[in-house]
Image 1 (cartoon, rainbow, N blue to C red):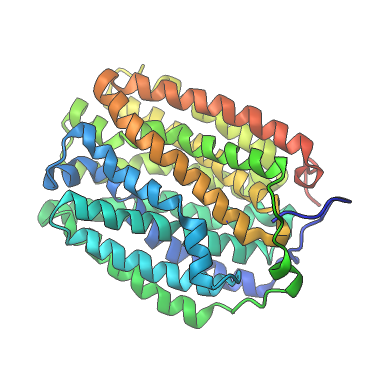
Image 2 (image 1 turned 30 degrees about the vertical axis):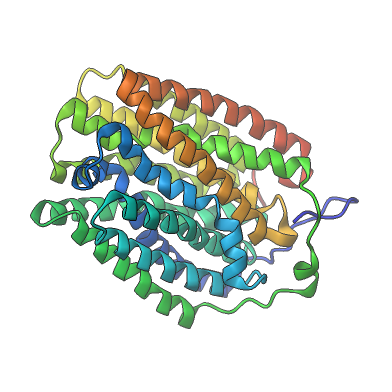
Length: 406
């Protein structure tokens, strides 16, 4: 979401940026805006959805955990969907269809058990849309300029809350959370038509199809663990965002969407900064800067004397988290350039495994000790992430780069 034979350092197989990749970047970003909006819908609206499905606060985390649990089987599903070939268009089309249909199913589910089962499907298929889009663009963009290209797509992660959450909040207030969620499912499923018609079908070289090494290298394992920690970092706090606003501040359902969009502006700023920072400061340095900013916001969050200041601190943490994540993605895309899609799928599974465990623990921690417990978990994960990422980059020359690209 691979491994080269022993010998000299393997350089990226990606060609310089081409008109094809630039032309389709907007299409892929639009599709990811919709799929991210469906995937992140539960976070701000978790208390509303949980009450409708007769779940209490401590069990509400099971809904988000279902999404993450599904993500752990993404690599196996990728193989099924593509028939063993790493063809980005086919992977994008089929995973988009599955995601949209499953989202519609959740929207009409009468009980929590059925909804959780369908959320597992969403969690398994939605990350494959990300894997396909990152692989498609990475194959066509030189590593020295890849952070700029991938960060454009990653803007849709924050954009999904900035754009989707306020509209969903209004619709949920008028009717039910099921209405905007079902609409998202329809749009996601329908976007597969545009992907099928507009994206080029990849011709995978025979040497890439034949590359199936038997074991993982140390660098790959370290990067997978780094990604797992990175996604656990803010998940421990962000997964209880809606519960915190509802329990501590009594925020209405309409306001939940607006506040989610406000904090997501921090993510938008963070992803936007990587457009310049990632390739000029360096992807590793940019990631470390993001981790530092995230830790600062997390420290300030429980100390804030009012809701507006707390929202500001949380937005700062989100901005730092997004800088770190978006800067790490192009590094991960170069860990194994010969079988990139395969490794990115494994990376997605590692992040989902981390999120699944953290989502359950986070809800329990919040119910038992409040927001400070969640913040402590997040800060610990941030420190471990920065340490392991630094070790990995220093050990792999392919991931090292000058301060400024030429």
